[in-house]
Length: 267
Image (cartoon, rainbow, N blue to C red; front, side):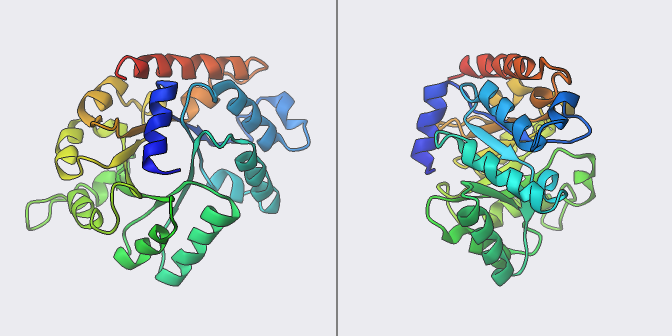
């Protein structure tokens, strides 16, 4: 999906919500576990409940690959089930030497037909650019994450007075462009959004961390939205695990609807 189509979809649905599909067998409602493919069945019902309220889905690959071949099969079925009218992100956090990155790109862009993949920039430009060679596909670079450990490296101050994450944004923004490069910026870093927008004013930001992690959606919107909206705000646990019983599908809809209504006020 290209940038213009993504922007059009956001305005059509009056939403920039991304739903994280992180199916944990220890949290899935017990009656789902009795089915032949509980991972896919759980995802299918979440998708049915939320597809009119969100513009993107983000399967976290760890929840699938830990199950071996069956997990990858469930992922493929999930990807195939999602409508073409949705932006599909592989939350894989890959990043390796060039020829290996090419194979990762082939896996997620061709074998599984994702629109985007999250990538760690630590190994530098030649580990990221192979992902940028596929037309109408996106790389989402880890910029400033929402976990507590982000202070270990990302927020260290360099000799030029910039923080590490700021240097990452400045340098990597030249590796691609606003049509194929996004950044992960955690919602719990709301005080940083204005300064980040001065560095990358026109890029889309994938923003995890609202809801269960404590990020404030309104502050993210006020400080992070640009002329193209420029935000995909992710919620995982707050939607997919809103209930652990037979009502989980209805509760997922209700939680997604709350977020969509709040987003619509700004569109």
